[in-house]
Image 1 (tube, rainbow over the protein chains, first blue to last red):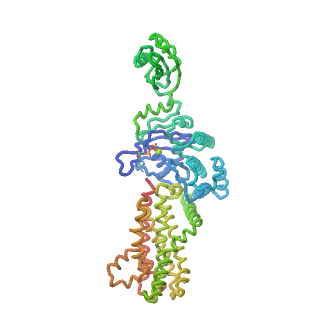
Image 2: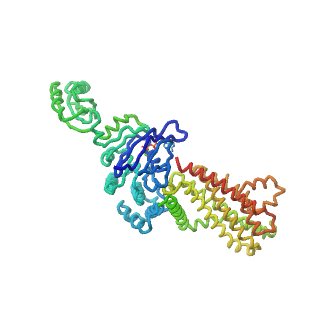
Image 3: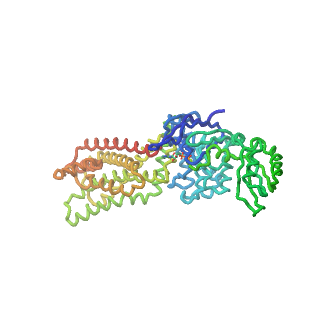
Length: 327
Length: 260
Ligand SMILES: Nc1ncnc2c1ncn2[C@@H]1O[C@H](COP(=O)(O)OP(=O)(O)OP(=O)(O)O)[C@@H](O)[C@H]1O
Ligand SMILES: [Mg+2]
């Protein structure tokens, strides 16, 4: 399996900044893979994408795209990559279709090929009716799709998508996901940054979680979830019948296999009928704990009104690794 | 395909994009480059002359200066203004920075395209001047050297524009006119022969720092050899030097803006 993107000990400190925006980051993306780069705000994702697309000069470290050293041969690297940035940067002096055509011309796509490709991509991105629209007249989602079309028109080996679904409605998001899946079948390597954990889980073959400019972990979403301590959850809704919710939680936490108990939601109902919801984080198989939990609650004469099993999500992994503090 | 071939092709395409966009906005481009020099030529060359406030022959001195002014200033403005906008919030230039050519080539393209517009604007002044003044008594043997001055003047204007455009932050664009353009217009010897300024020594020295002076003097010397003027080789040397200094500074500032 060949490597499409190779980042080794990448460090970037912006001028006048007191700390490193990217601080010794290393990871590899395989050819044809969809790689999710996750991380809290300011983690260094956009900076990393900037270095990989020649726009940011690294302080140290080495990055390669398809075997080409980006620092040493930026022009060759630029023929291999395409990027859909976080902010719209379409050419406002040109209309939608011209944006595609000129971009293709910069990249040396022949005349008839670029016209055919432009029409095909506009069609594929649902923009056929907007071919002659001024860039200023496009909605946020339409601009986003046009930037994706523009990125694809020179047939890049690696496509960088920096938070592509921010600001998209659910329909547009699904549409985008389908297009990204198409890229997988075309063999284009995709590096995707996102804050949408469901999206990352759904699309990515592997994800890397970055914080403070360092890679915390890289693996498939399912493996990351499995490795999370307390990766299974059990939500129990109880009527405590005199017992305090804390005491009920405490007694459940004593059951072997239960790692942590958290109160979720607000108590509902009144007086003795007050209902409390507790979430149990479980190591190993959740189903094996059904019996012990029910038995323990029965012992304490607590009424169970609802019980639901769940598994952890990528978001739980993310929070577990990066903490709850906002950046 | 070699990197150089790829880069050359991309360079041509980026230049082609600018030509295409200009072609579409030709009327506004013409207005931008012609209104000011035509007005100057009309007031100083025609109105003041007919009212008797200027000596006969002043219009003849003014015309080469106006052509030089247009070459230099249009090149400067057409390099700097778009650049300031390109680097502002819209970041439109990014698509070209990501095209497969060295970033410094994008800077050169910007400068070259500004210079082409300057040259075009200067050439337009020939027929307009002839029409407005009715009669010009030029030494036509000096025409090739005048054209050389125009070309060098446009290039110098482009390099100064690149420096200014890449160095001025977008929110300062409005003071750019007051503190940079206006002084350049009036210290460039385009409205007066520099060589005759001996009684205004300090002003003569100030003018010597303006590259436009050498364009005006070179053109006037070539077309009106009887008017006192600077030696042609001085003009060429100064303009080449200006291109070199401002070209290097401009590319340096451009790289600093384009790369984080
Ligand atoms: N041009 C710049 N100059 C100085 N500091 C910068 C610059 N760009 C980013 N930074 C800083 O570098 C750090 C990483 O920023 P970066 O944009 O890479 O984060 P990110 O992971 O993309 O965040 P987000 O999820 O919010 O987009 C931040 O602390 C940011 O403030
Ligand atoms: Mg970002």
